[in-house]
Amino acid sequence: QVQLVESGGGLVQPGGSLTLSCAVSGFAVSRNLMDWYRQAPGKERELVATITSYGIATNYADSVKGRFTISRDVDKNTVYLQMNDVKSEDTAVYYCHHFRTWGQGTQVTVSS
Image (cartoon, rainbow, N blue to C red; front, top):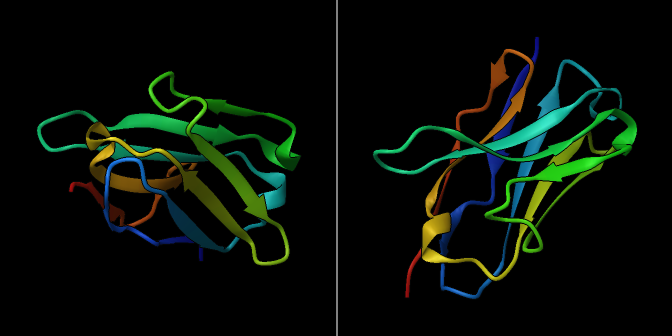
């Protein structure tokens, strides 16, 4: 059974850092493209970051480029989103995604 379980969200101050995790079961992250999306209140869900199969390439939304990093741990079958220098506009529910499967989401709130 394919399952994505996010964790690591919480309250963080502007300029701070946070790492989100997505524990994957049912398939190998090493051989599959994985995404992080986010959805802020009243806004559409948007793509934040992508890592291709075998980690060949990563892509980022312009709004997070240079601040966020997507990565994976093959042994733990987990995908991460390292968030640095966070801003208030990064406040959203963050979702892990693969093909037709979504995680339940984890809330990130950036506030002083």
